[in-house]
Image 1 (cartoon, rainbow, N blue to C red):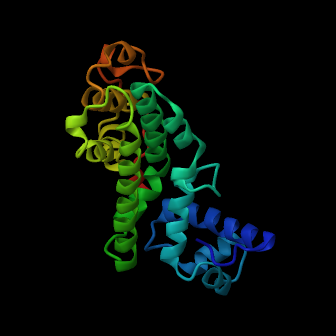
Image 2 (cartoon, rainbow, N blue to C red):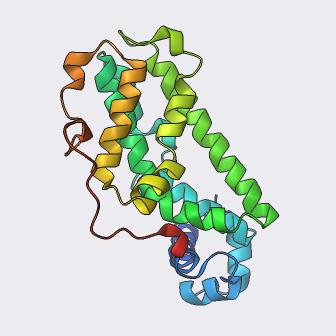
Length: 235
């Protein structure tokens, strides 16, 4: 979180820094990007970076966090409107669909910066950030799994593992494996992940599962290969 974001001017400066850092981290990598380069790209003094964030690793953390929340940048992930929709939805598979659609969307959105964090994890500060990111993701999945467990049809025998199932299926690592490495389309990856989660957590809801949760349901065809997929690790 930016230190200097209490005033409108401070927030604008911090946003400019994050925008500049995002481009440089993704294009050049974390290690190769200097604070001087970020300052020049953002049009501020180097000292401003330290006053606003404290360290380069803290800027990277802010880049990641803003990628998670997207347009609702002032709203924590679990306070986003879609989480309230999950709580309000009485139908289990439909609630799961909301969880998967939004969680998978987050993973796709953060994939590039997450790859930057992974690549730079030899740095102790970045390694700590990577561990924190994973811990926060698991915490979110535990809360979402607890909400899903209140829905009719939930597989109570998997209550202890529900969060782990969600944690694995919505992981950026799985996105990297299937979409980046194996060239599945995002739609097919999302549809497959939803189908797998639904069969585990709501195994008896066959009627609802027949409705494709995403533009293309993978259950009716083999995974399509995307024409061109950018490899986040390549920068």
